[in-house]
Amino acid sequence: MKKAALSIIAFSFLLLQACSLTPPDWAKPAEKKNLADVKIGLSVSTLNNPFFVSLKNGVQQEARAKGMEVIVVDAQNDTSKQINDVEDLLQQGIDALLVNPTDSSAISTAVQSANNLGVPVVTLDRSADKGTVATFVASDNVKGGKMAAEYIVQQLGKGAKVAELEGVPGASATRERGSGFHQVADTSLNVVAKQSANFDRTKGLTVMENILQGNPDIQAVFAHNDEMALGAIEAIESAGKEILVVGFDGNADALNAVKAGKLAATVAQQPEAIGKAGVKAAADVLQKKKTAAKIPVPLKLVTKE
Image 1: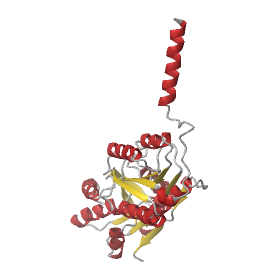
Image 2: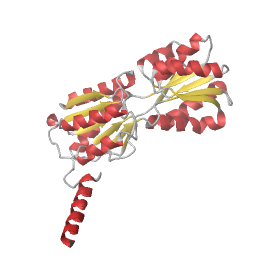
Image 3: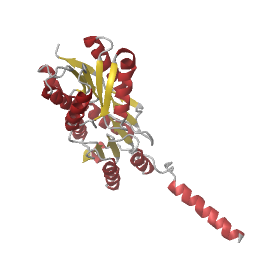
Image 4: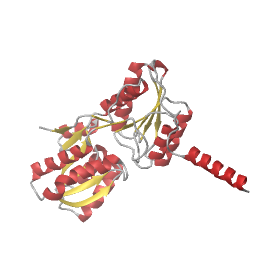
């Protein structure tokens, strides 16, 4: 009986080791001296957004310049699909994973799967809450949120009534842009309404219509991305109002809207630069070069002036 009990305990211990999320010693990224042999997997939150299309283009351009192969998958803003997409990429034998998470918490499972296979992970624009990430390439979203709030105060003065269109709940960009915005807004502005529009232009239109019904005297809107800002502008124009709107990303449509005087400002990122920096970081990791834990890409407030 004692031998049987010991055997059960030993077997249970082995099972626990096998199921552990801690990568085994053998699961370490293999050094790749020839980048032409490298296959990169890129999982994007959605390609129904010009910002992430530009990010993808940056990845593909830099990978092409280095002779690396890229497999791109579109999560379509579906967290379950993104996890399945990453699992498929891993089964295809990718050497490195670049991921722009739909949800920073939900993606952790997929990151840990990559960790267990020794596939290095680089996150783009949004971080992962758990798992080992070689580096995180992004703009300073907190700083960008502060820039937006400071611009509104500068234009309208303290105490101006503002609505906030938030991004996808759970995304690190949503949390960080909102955090930066409120560092200024909570003391210098009057945020009378805030609601998620999931970084989507159509939802930005619908949410803004609802907000205007309950708060017709709003003076400004801060949207966590340009797509929601452009949707908000449609609602504002339909209501025959003049409201200052600030977006975030600096995509082509937003920049044109700034030139036309429809969008007051956008906190412009450089999505192609983010994509290119992600590929360079992945190449450095695979070639055993030192890589910073976070690679920042500069922001710029773009206005008509």
